[in-house]
Image (tube, rainbow, N blue to C red; front, side, top):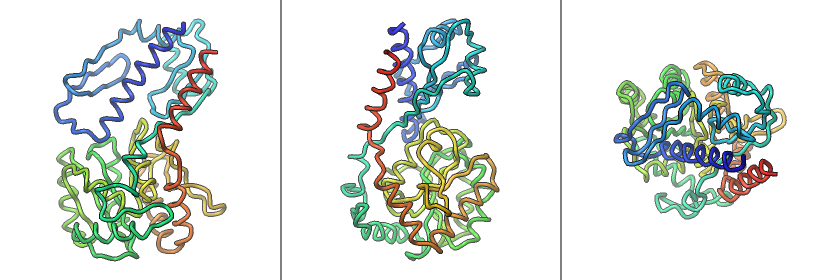
Length: 338
């Protein structure tokens, strides 16, 4: 039983590691395998082997495991009674939490040494949560580099992403004119589907001096956007874990995200009445809902600097390290093996 559980966990972690790699890697030469029966698509470098499991193997893995993890890097682990379970039963039950007991909710980490605004050589000036003067310098230098009006009082929204549908680009296209009608600047870095690249190219011409677009990927510019942005937009349709929102918070950019997967686990909605939260969120995959929270974030930046600074500090001082994650993984495995 234990060997089967360990094998299942290791397979899941290998798959999830590939998913995390795909967040930032150049995937142009990757191969894709579609597993229709499991409703699963795996993309990975061509020189990595992908093993396809049969329905029987998948069913055995689910039925004999002590716990099952969903397809999220948040690693929500549910204990369940395998007696009499079938693959169809397990899939149906995983769509709700009925029949499962939530054992743990694990969020993966980021490299807090590599992603550190206090030491990052990509930045114009380093800074930390206690000394934010350097962040203001990075914002001004980023605005200057990208041809935006250099203005510390205008909130700058950043977006570093692949330009593909499941990253929520349809919502951005639908709402761009609405939120750009406010006093805000917008920077997009990414590459992907031609329709989105064309849309953003035309959009930046309409909003000259207020919107900048870089079609491609530059590690240096990406880190300068994290450092220079006041807000970070990540409206994904699906997001197994998401690294960008954690990097953004570490660099002092307050996140605006859709409540899905790891985004929901790491970003908690700001509540004006009690001051709780560390960002802005919306639940439904809906352009109107997204536009509403973007406008809320912009208004907060303009009208309540104290509340904005509080959200910024919470993100910069949060523990997103792998040290924390590793201990939580250990706790999960030890609880399962008791």
